[in-house]
Image (cartoon, one colour):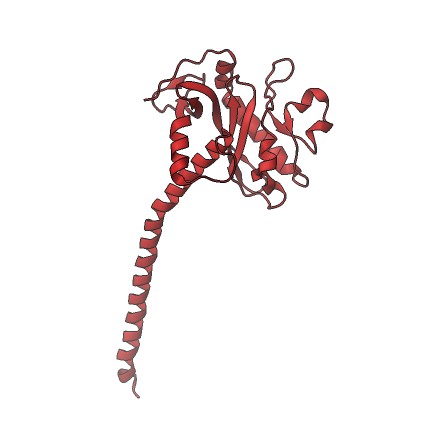
Length: 239
């Protein structure tokens, strides 16, 4: 068979391959675009779940989506504050996101986002406080890259429950943050125990980075905590 006779056949194969590749590319693109909305919705829902967990409004298991949204709308209010801890109406370069834990119009506490480095990547979560501006009421982690069974234990219930009741001030009412001990917090000197939680065996660096990150984030939000400690928070009405 001559080259002239085989050329049309080769051309058809090439055209078919190009057409098939084009169709596959279009299908993949369409799927990616279609899934993007679902992914964004799931991320938003996961954010609400972890904020509610930090606020101790979800205790066992994960409620249905409808209940999660109802709990969030009833008890959580997202606001912006400036570097002095004042609530602002619109975004500003120094604006920080803050979440009030509310019972009707009464502010029962507040939640700050935690964003810090870990051993293998970012650790993101939420740290909740009572309205005294010094006592931790909850902690949750929703994103990390730590080693399962070691640093990955930061997302476990036993670790996160350790934060409840811890203080960010020492016995002299000086800011010291709340850190992760190397081992049991009860093994530390008595005056340090109230500012530390139990560490994770085999995850010293994860604890170190998380401690540093929590302190760094708390320092940014310290004007908010001071405002709560001074009972000087201006009433906030729901829009």
